[in-house]
Length: 244
Ligand code: CDP
Image (cartoon, rainbow, N blue to C red):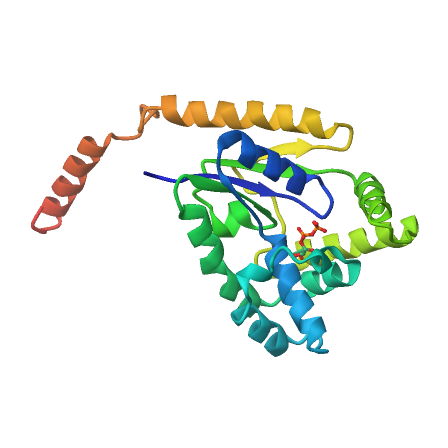
């Protein structure tokens, strides 16, 4: 049985987490919030009173990460979010977390993964990819509301500034920067409710999945079919004096 993989990428507070959870329930798939992995590494570095900007400290924390600790409520704290964005910029940290994410995705029946580099690096073979975004102001408003609900004191200007800094760091890093995969479908949630985003996503994913089922393996008449290609390759290799 092949796994169905749905990749959801996007910047902080774009609504991708809520969408990914709902899509996983809808399609009967597992869900991995990959941000929680980087947050857990950030948390462990802070707990050890080390610096998230230090690649050695961050890589050690990533290598000894306990996946059972991913539902810790402390992961949602702002200082942990900031540390997550710092540790995520170290290539060694990303390398240490790669295999876990790929194994999770490939386990039948499949999974919805949300993050920054799912469609570009972790699962470039995903059958459906969405890039979920919203304006920085809308995202800051949502993040501020989330913090208020959790009983935290909120300064909107500081939240907006934090979102801008995180966007710049996530998009500007050299390893696995945040960017839309070429075959990802863009969903701008700035003016949409969570229900409207979900309905739109279901339509887009449904369209993509049925297109990939209906599309014959070689739809381009100018592109040779497998048999034709084999024939061409063997004649070429015969021309070159190979064994054919
Ligand atoms: O919820 P929010 O978007 O604020 O953050 P998150 O998705 O929990 O991710 C926290 C941080 O981890 C982000 O700022 C990214 O720097 C990093 N991250 C990443 O680099 N790659 C991923 N696949 C997921 C998160």
